[in-house]
Image (cartoon, rainbow, N blue to C red; front, side, top):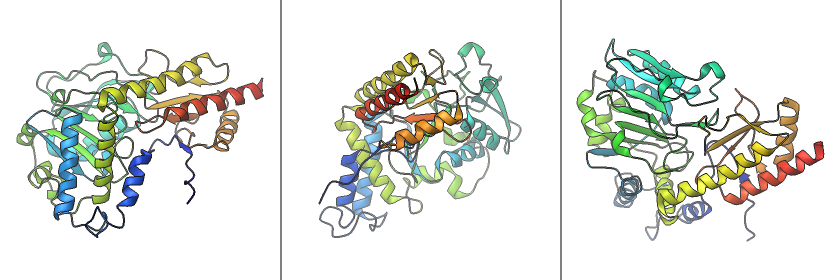
Amino acid sequence: MPAPLRHYNFSAGPAVLPESVLEEAGRNLMSLGDTGVGVMEHSHRGKPFVEIIERAEALIRKLANVPDGYSVLFLQGGASLQFAMCPMNFLPDGGTADYLMTGSWSKKAAKEAKLYGNPHTACSSEATNFDRIPTPAETTYSDDPAYVHFTSNNTIFGTQFPTEPTPPGDAPLVCDASSDILSRPLDISKYGLLYAGAQKNLGPSGVTLVVMRDDLLERKCREVPAMLDYKTYVEGKSLYNTPPTFGIYVLMLVLDWIEKEGGLTAVADRNETKATKLYDYLDGSDLFKPTVAKGNGRSLMNVCFVTGNDETDAAFIKFADERGLKTLKGHRSVGGMRASLYNAFPPAGVDKLIEAMEEFEASRS
């Protein structure tokens, strides 16, 4: 059979997956190995799937160098559920949690926290349409926050924290890492709770990775339903109820792929090379301009750019789409273009995008 058509997928999520992962998953749809039962048909309590989820956890621990005293959980509901689940468990009535406001997702997280306590805005770049990451000098923490929350990468506005903020005292650091999880090395010991939807760098939609320090369970501040209690998943090893088994299987394959690629250091080098090449072109272009200036925390995952004219933006998106460069349209709230360069996005796709921009720009001169 002829090879299937594969365009360059710049989608912000669900996003591109490694082709080897797609092929492996496809081979196991009818029968997982020699079990005679498809991977989506296996019981979540059966030995074949238990081996999958244990392998996935082991790979997370190895790739991210997760220290002892942390649990690795596979949940559902995406980052959006974590926006509520975190304060529901750890923000006491009348208590304060600090939020670093760098985009739409951090705003949504803080909004959920208002249901349980008082979210304090420690810093914000909203006045300039979230075009930068505030500096530590611009960040003012409250006296005794229950935790400090930040979004490590902002898919909509194209900004990314270069390193973790430092919370005051013993306040746990909580991170929504949905769009840059495992795209670079990270020091898990700096975090109390880190969560990420899988659909950008880890696998398909439907799985939420949570890595949390076990002692946080002692800070639980109210009774919550079992399905919203972190302790439920720690004690049940993510198998309290039926998890998204196929999604966890594909996530395991992606983690295997990351390991074979050389781990997080090698992946980070490749990601930086891809993004740098694209930013270098944009910085020198007379037509296309990046929306985030140098030194303001440019994202290596989501490169946002514009021409300055909505009609020209639309014309380029159509021009690119006809050349197999798909889903470049920026988020509806900001417009323009957005090239998402997650781990599995091939470097050749960046070259093709630059070629298209050069051709389009030449046609306009």
